[in-house]
Length: 276
Image 1 (cartoon, helix red, strand yellow):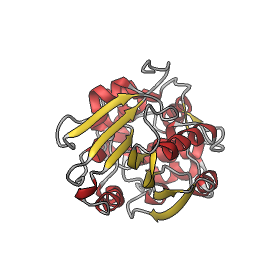
Image 2 (cartoon, helix red, strand yellow):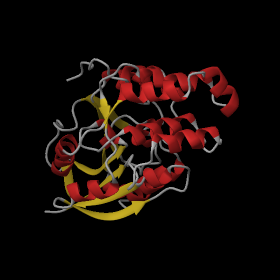
Image 3 (tube, one colour):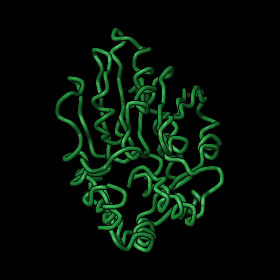
């Protein structure tokens, strides 16, 4: 593991990570459920955390004293460029591996956390394989906390996205990008090709300079979508109900936190405990 996939946007994202913003990256409202789960263990437990990906905001969370943090990402470029070297627990490390083949013993972690991870996997097979591994490496009384990027129950048409953009009702470029992606996806099983997201954006906004001026969005932020150009990689946005059905046999849902920011209804954080 560790080699990059042709058309993979993540090496580009690694170089431009500072330009990626919410909701693609978590804000304080998203991090609150994680902090609550971490705090319930108390410092005397020596919390063992597995982070799916290298999200800096999660790595730098206010973890209890004695926490050990292990991050796993399939992209060495992301590990090298994004995983923080300061502000993390003293016992922190990052390794390159697949979430469906975690190199850890059963019950090795008390808390498994991830941010938007399911979007990077095919659904349901890839997500199912990853959560099965999370179940294996999680301690009996541990918790699995995952923020979803979830398509709405009724998928909106591209025309609605275009209408809201023209009316000034889309608050950030990253929200526009996610709304385009979800509108283009016919189903979670099929996903959406990244190259198609770029094509739809290029047709909707042929004049980037005008878009930047009209909306006040930095041109370098708009340019982050160019990581998608021509890529055959697919993202998936399963509905919350679809995720619940997939996890129902092995996991018990304890909470669902829906943030109040724009598009927050599509970015809920779910908390699970193991069954069996």
